[in-house]
Length: 417
Image (cartoon, rainbow, N blue to C red; front, top):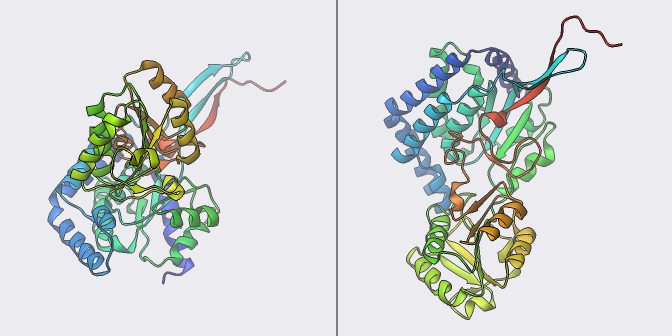
């Protein structure tokens, strides 16, 4: 077990590193990011070996397939990470930008300068790729980060952090800007939550229990996302082939992620034609269907309970409901949605615009898969998480979302009368 004084030492070192990063040049930060991408390629065999230890231990512990999928590092994952690092390096550096500069009647120039948040505590489970993404974004935004990964990814995270620290050192930046808490003991989570004055923000990324614990215990601001109870509404004007493709991709491509599809709402006018096509495609993808009574009149499905409409499955399970109007679909989403990701399939321009305006979610899509609610896919290079709260950030959090603004004023001797 790690003691509080030791954890404070890590956080204090991160705070000193954050001061150095806040003053670091964009070129130094970009040099480190590009070096990280190169090291992911050069050290991939060592990373695979470390990850294999984690996978074997996780399999022996009986972890479900969804968690094993999140844990696995393969060439596709590493390639996406390398691409993401290079994209982050190419992005404009937000630190020091002055926005909204205006001249007051007395000649004083007033604006907002974008500045780092400081030290970020990042608590996450079973996702070694998140180690790289979170560290890269924090670095670009001029923040230090203290990582507390899950025990399932212990060997992978250690290997990755060593690699990231090597890149920092080679770029002339403090290695303490990226640190891994040297324990997976659960008590470390509570201790991080209580480090007010040392950590400026905590971001939990994991299951509902973890997020609720951090929100309850944290003595500093928390950015978190709720469950991904994500819907697809298939409007009566929808292109049915596209709707089936989007539904299958949203549900079956990677069901363990928070941006996967969990519910489909189908307009009653097309239900007799669309539902058999959907059922056939989902059977081929080995997806279990649960449906309301009207759905089960058209296709075989298990009866859907009230709890099904609230549940984030993170598995090959999909709940389906027939609705009569767009209004009914909007009401259902407002009642059961988690403000994460919502989709409409429609060829009706007015319905699409209304859905975009009225649905409250961090990403609302028209005729596209919910799987696009991802920082990399949306052009952020990577993400540190998806915020479903509206204060400070809403949706995938990239570089800009890891900064804030302070007022600055430029004068020529003005005094207040």
